[in-house]
Length: 355
Image (tube, rainbow, N blue to C red; front, side, top):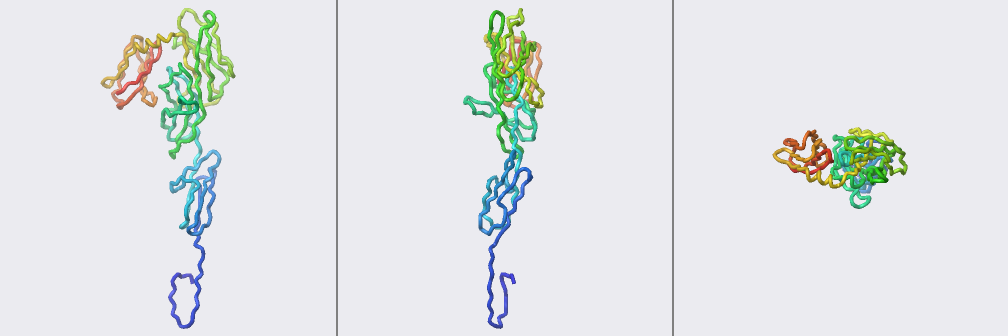
């Protein structure tokens, strides 16, 4: 009999023997997808012994957690009863930047939303080489384009990286580095102009496109040269009759990429023979401030347009202007800090305002 307690009536001598066995328990494991990984360590274990379950993700996947929300791997525990655990594995997501181009005198970062995530994080190399600082966090639902309003592409080149936070809330590895082009010019023999620029890094390309204009609004392609070490160019026949000239370099990436904002050409900064005093005068001539739900802009130069961004770089409003003053309503904006970018015929200025 297997009863733990037994009642008998004794009528004669009786001999009984109790037989004991090791109390064992079954530890079972499963995974959310067998192609994502495996778990080792399942089996039969004596009561009070130690079990160790190890989640082994396949290449391209990572261990997220056990079904009891424990993230420890290997999972070591004392067996006190039958146990069943499931290991959750997920794909490693490493987003890639499409390009970093220049628009309105600031760097614009574009990427492709090829996998569903919670958000993206944009990083820029800081003052120490190889160390990247977080600039902003972009929700997945937003456009895959962000303007770095703190960048100064006329002054220097920049390196950027992007990471993604997956649907489980884990920020994964940063993607490849993209480094912008930086163009400078100097006057050569007679009326000739020499162009020197740094190479773009982060995507493959085979040619450079040379742009030139006598105003910022009439930039035209004047030549195409092969890439692969060619980072200089001399414009031997620039237009005459104007004391200003502007140049810009572009490339066409060979790798297809589809950001939600369709830009095909990666552009450098615009380099010009315009004296720095002119740009300083633009800043002195501009008056930008916030008052009673309005952004007020006054300039001695004709204003072309005014754009308002939030502190993360998201474009909130664009107003076309015909004249040297503008009143932009922000009455429906929340209280906070905003970036106001004013473009005139002589250049672009960005200022902070507080509502």
